[in-house]
Image (tube, rainbow, N blue to C red; front, side, top):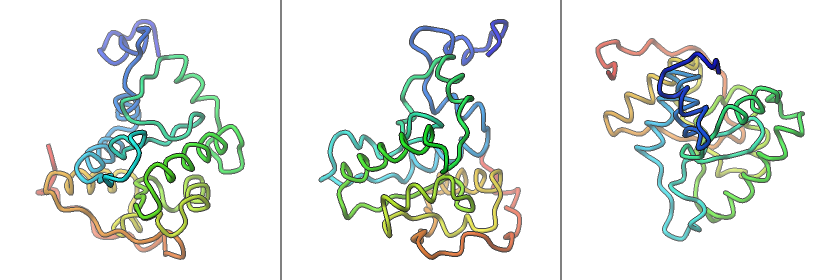
Length: 191
């Protein structure tokens, strides 16, 4: 956010057209978000019956604008507004836009299309809001249970590179916290 920052993403954020949300979140989150985007791009599947507004089926949860496609443009002002919002299911500034956009997306996808959450499943900040709207069709990767952010990011990158998706379970009633699985094999790291 510094005016002195001269790398490409910083310059794009200062430009009137901004930068893609996915690029910004990848920069801020590193491996975890890079894994999410790679995995989503490899495995997102939107039914032919979905409305065009469902796009490619990949959406990012933002602090104050709900679900946005990773191609959505953001600038420094948007980042400052993001930073001013507490991401909590109890905060209307976060919850209301997420509810609005999740209801629209659920309708655009149609009632039979599953919705896969690649975010934190151990916290209610996403699950509580999305489950109330999507019910049993809100799924999560079973392999996430017990993993931290970095491990999930590495796992998603490996899955995207191998073409092998994870196993999805309904969030409703699922065990979302568990024993930490073995560390990922460094030999399978994606470069």
